[in-house]
Image (cartoon, rainbow, N blue to C red; front, side, top):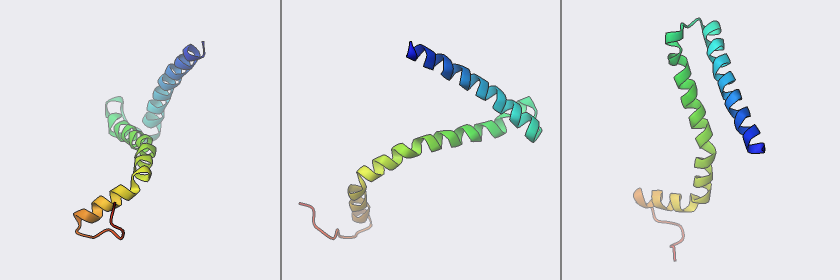
Length: 84
C-alpha cells in the first residue's frame, strides 16, 4: 500500500513540478515554449551533477589512500611508507 501511495505521489509531484517550473521560466524569463530547453536542459544537467556528488565523494573517501598513492606514482613521487 505504501509503495502505491509513494509511486502515485512521486508521479504527481514530478508532473506538477515540471509544469510549474516551465510556467515559471516562461513568465519570469519571457521565453517562448520552443526556447524553454535553453534554460531547462542546463537545470536538468545541474540536478544530475548535484545528485551524483555524494556517490563520488563516498567513493573518493573510501579509496583516498589508494588514489593518492596511484597519483603519486604517476607523477614519479615515492610514497612516504612503502606498501607491504
